[in-house]
Image (cartoon, rainbow, N blue to C red; front, side, top):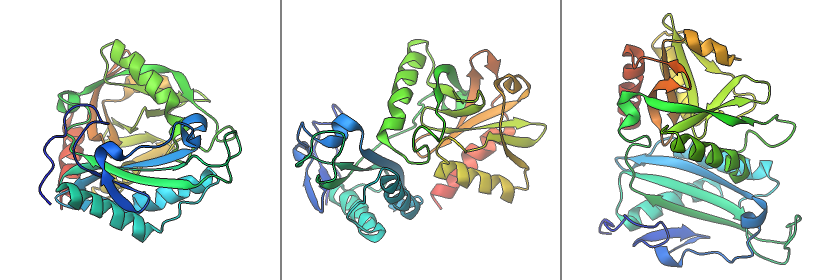
Length: 295
């Protein structure tokens, strides 16, 4: 199919196709009923993925995590990993895209239940996509500026922290809005214990004396890009410390970067009152990751 070109404007008013519940539908017809359980009670999980040169980077792992996230929320997506993978590529082909962001989302839909319990409601699945540039725009190689969020990542005893669930992003939206109002591009969370955790949609890494330090992913999502970057650093024979990091330690770190499917590897220049250089290792990781995902 010819490439869809009219991708600017509101996300609900574009040309193109979206995969919903087993079939491709026109973009503007990809709707749900107002009384959808996921809209009211956050019974929704999702994945953000990137397609480079016609291949989704770690697509299977994303689909596996999507199904696992749903299980964490006590529902089962009625499609296999293989069927989800086919749906993604069918959506990309229908829109004529080889380089795009891919968004898969599963949720409890509308049905016989409209309260906290929703076991009788169907589980829905949709896969959309769009063409997208740098997540942090011009800030990427200059070094992004981060605010420090007033909210904290919660304890694993309070919420399914290892699921990529919609409800976990409520404080992300609020924190990012507050950060943007201060002229920052993102915000850094501490966790419920006061340790450094993550940004609103990305994991964080620090450099000191040629070694890398990153928060232990014991109360937030262990990102696929995070795992990829740790593997890349180990291949480069650079020591990686996955550990609890106190916020005051940031004063002694020399470099910093964020990782995520959308962010890829984005150097950080400032977090609150702490400043970092966009150094050689940060630049090397940006370039190495960009090469890896297109290989």
